[in-house]
Image (tube, rainbow, N blue to C red; front, top):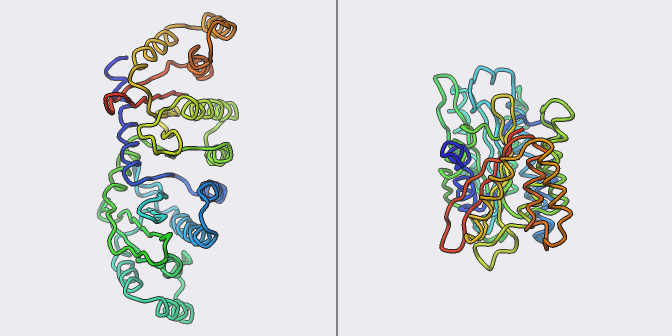
Length: 371
């Protein structure tokens, strides 16, 4: 594998480590539509059901997710087109960390509104539960609803339902605009409270996501229902022709199944095979990337298999697939490398890959396919 190709996908391991650090499960960046927000909520619902979370916690998480997603959608006005570059897109992050579900959203705001927004947030954070309820009624009675329908009502509801303070930060983009990060936590234990949150890890990940123009990232184990919700998020994207979407779906499924079937665990106590999947857009093409742990002992063999498959073209590739499929002396599709061949055939492009050493027995395998 050429050095420049390794550099192209080496950030996959950086993203994975950053998400593992704070147990980040899902990041979406881009256009927020009703279909997309529904898919995000459905995916979170599936994950919460799988974790056996209480109905009380699930209800609070969903309510706050809706408020956050509506807040981002509400600020997707045409005026944000004057914000050129990657920070024009909104972002939504959910993580299960420190005995709480933590939700972060981000969107562009005008610098002229920052002082008022800070005052609103500081006021909300200074109030107790009963005072928040009274403050909510006061704003309703004042009739000071803004053109975007907010007037802080959504922020007050987030504070009330989470039982925690609203943490925030601003990143200056230019003289007129800044990027607004909003974070809250829903404690699994009602007695737990969060007095301080460090947003630096999410902001650093956001920089990588913007630089690589990543649409979405999923980190963790994934079941069939969760896969469907991820696919529906992609389906809602303005990707273009039907045949392109179909190809994306097929390759996406194959890559995710590869993590489930062939991934390894770094630690015995983990419930499933940890991995990462993300999609980025660049130069009229889509890059599908995955990453997972593998045994260090098979790195050389896997590298040779991919290099060999990358060197075969056209009919020869079809013939090689059939030969491997019908070779009954091979015990499994894992040994035959059928998944690798299938990805090469479906994409029509060579597979980019790299390996990052984790410890004496485990390496991290990054794979990227361009459509």
